[in-house]
Length: 436
Image (cartoon, rainbow, N blue to C red; front, side, top):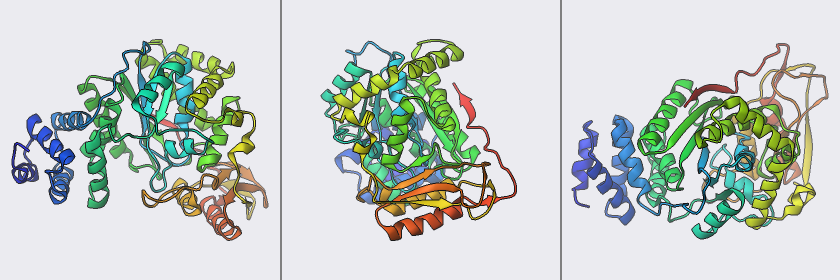
């Protein structure tokens, strides 16, 4: 490091503004180890407590991006647009969105993460597909992108390596909630993908990273501003995560829902959020400058089976077994599937996504620690949603579990998360705000 790390840490601790060179120096120390663990923790805490001005956040993002390899896709003529979600329960949008947008002429180089805690991860869902590979070399990633229009890979050690150490330190140092640190973590990896534009799906609600809407809006504004400062096109939607997205919660079960949706039947909320994000991606990519015509194009490609063809092509290129598209039994099934029945007549008065997400984790479908193994087959399939009228004994949901005892305990918890009452409640708007 060119600067003494303690001096830079003290400067930020006292509310000072770090220069671009000072930030680059700190990030280089993160990568080569000259910035010690205690110093990194102190720096992150100083940022968490005092924040960063937009220029600092942009400098931090670019320094983290440039800490590793930045992909170039000059061989791909299409506009390169990606999407990122801040995470939630039942959020399998990426698996539908990527082939949908690729079918419309956009290239989607998507590097996604694994789930941690109650939020599921795209890479874990893809791992439920027999043979599907996300540990792609950069060269293979680029080949798949060129051939079928989208590629989906797990993070590589070559991409934004500074974030790997900073993210792990944030997780144990009480600095996860810092908006500048969240912004730089997300965008450094996305900018390294070699994209022309990015659409952000920022969730808010009980099962979102940002529970309060004002916090989610602040994050959305930061992401859009820094992305634009870094030279890419940006758009963002603020979407609801006060209830689960779709009916299936759990990796293999969510893949089943996606494959079924390729042929048409799709939960309304999953379809609407997917289309809303896809429209933004087409607008950023210049496929059309009109949202209505973009939506019409996407619906036609979906209805005519083109999206399923693109999904199949990607599946073949990334080592998956395309027979699953016609035989869902190849995905496997949990040994114990039990119904959760309504104890009384009335209306489903809540579907608590956080409680349900924790049930999936405890069944083995999620991680408490990064090293935890995932059981792809366990989870929950909802049969009723908020406001639905039910009679005593109607099935509210099915629990998929590894053991009978786990199924029984989970069913009791699902029943508590889906109370039935006399008042009929309706879900609020799925898309709460747009920034473009």
